Image 1 (tube, helix red, strand yellow):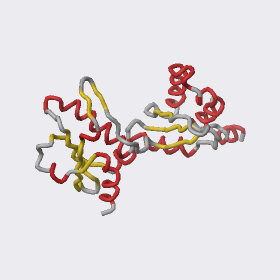
Image 2: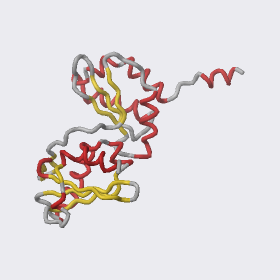
Image 3: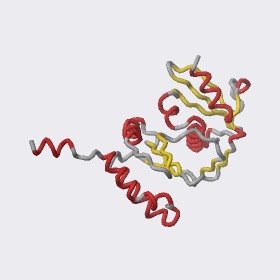
Length: 201
């Protein structure tokens, strides 16, 4: 009976994380004071729930801050994002968000390659029960395929958010404006709206 009693009261990794978070919430809220040290502590605590979990902080707005729980695009760890989010306490200074949300695409630079979202266009295709996406880059070169591939995935993550990219997107291709599909393409900034409409068809 004693063993059964203690078993029922054992805290889950998710509960232990939020106990730690609440205890250190002032430090986390003002992480800029010692960012590297605080982020290292936070990462260690999240790793106890799942090694793939990561996080993002939003800016302070009206006395509150967003805390994003992410699986870093690793679909196998999505259930841990869900369980950690579900266990989150109500804290007056925090807004908790599961999965990296959609954001306005930003200019990205990898190495010497810089791509403005205004120079990227898109086209959508049926891919089974998912949506295939083709991205058109103005200065695309096959010699820089790896770089453009990284930029394509990062821009899709911004435009559609982590969850939709991993669960609703099928093939992803990227090419130049010389493609035969380019004439029907639309701007990257319109991707979220077009994607939502496409998935309803």
